[in-house]
Length: 469
Image (tube, rainbow, N blue to C red; front, side, top):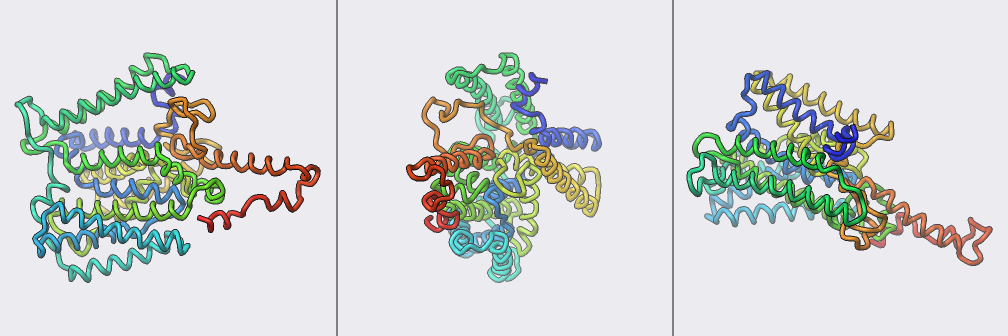
C-alpha cells in the first residue's frame, strides 16, 4: 500500500475522480463496442468541450475565493456576437477580432470585479445581474440573428495541427507534442528526486519513480497514437493545444506564484488574509476580471467551431463549468480546489455526455445521470470533511514536504506559501496571528492582565484590515 501511495503521489482517495474518469472511459468503450477510444471521437470530444474546460479553469479560482460566476455563458455570447459582427462588417483581420474579444471580456470583468471587490455586492448577485444584462445585449446587438465568422477564425475552434515534415505515418506536430510531454514527465521525476535529496528528504524508491513515469509515458504515447493516426487532414485539435497551454499557465499561477497564494489565502480565511497583508479587494477584482476574460475567449473558440455566432450561444455554460469544478474536488465553502482537478471533473462530465450519446441514451436521462453524479461528488467531498479526510483530489499534485520556512531551493519561503491547492493557507496565516497575539501579550505591563486595553486592542479588526486595503 505504501508503494501504491508513492506511485500515485499521496492518498489514493485523492484520485477517486481520476479513477472514475478511467472507469467511465473503459465502461463506455465496452458498452459501445469500441466507439469511444477512436481518433475521430477523441477529436470531437476535445473540440466539443474545450470551451467548458476553459471556463472551468477560471471558475475554480472564483469558487476558491468563495464566490460564484453565473454570467460566463452570457459574457461568452455577447463577446461572440460583437466579434462576429466586427469581422463581417468592418473587415478586420482575425487576430484583431481576437484582441477585440479579449478587450470586451476585460471591460466586462473589470465592471463585475468592481461591484464585487469595491462595492461589496456578492459575486452571485453581481453575476446574476450580469447574466441577464449580457444575454439581453447579445440579442439586441445581433438582433437575434446568426452571424457567420471567416474561415481563419474557424481554425481556432475547429482546426487541427497541420501536416508538415517527412512522411512518418503520424501527424508530425502531434508526434512532437507527445515526445515533449513524455520528456517533461521524465525530467520532472529526475528533478523531484534531486530536489528531495537537496533539502534532506529521502526520495521515493527508484522502482516507484520508474513505474510512475512509465505509466504516464504510456498514457501519453497512446493518446499521441490516437490523435496522430486519424483520418487525413485531422490531428490533435488546435483547441486542445490552446487548452493545454492554459492549463499549464494557470497551474503555475495558482500553485507557484504570490498571486495564487493570495487567492487560496483569501478563500481559506478572508479576515486572517487581510491581517497578514493580503489585499482582499485586489484579489477579488482580479479573480472576477480573469473569469470574464476566459469566458470571452471561450466564446470566441465556440463561434469558431460553430462557424457563426447565434442568440442562444452560451446557454447554461455556467452550470457545466460549476459542475466540473465541484466534481473535480473544490470545496463548496471555498479555499480548496485545483485547476487540474477541475479539468478532470470537466472530462468526467464530457465523457458522460459522449458515452451516453454513443449508447443512444436520450437527453432527459443524460441530464438525470449528470445531476446524480454532481450530487454524489459533492456529498462525497462533504463526507470526507466531516471525517477529517482530504478533499477528493484537492492535493492532486502536491509537492514533496519541505523544512519549515524553506522553499525548494533552500531559500526563505514567503509567509503565505500554499502547497497543493491552498488548503494550508488558513493554518499558515493562523500561525502569524498566534505569533502576533503572543508578542502583544508578553509586552511589559500586560502580564497578569490578558484582557487589558493594550492587549485587547492591539490588533485591527477584520473589517479594519479589509478597509485599509
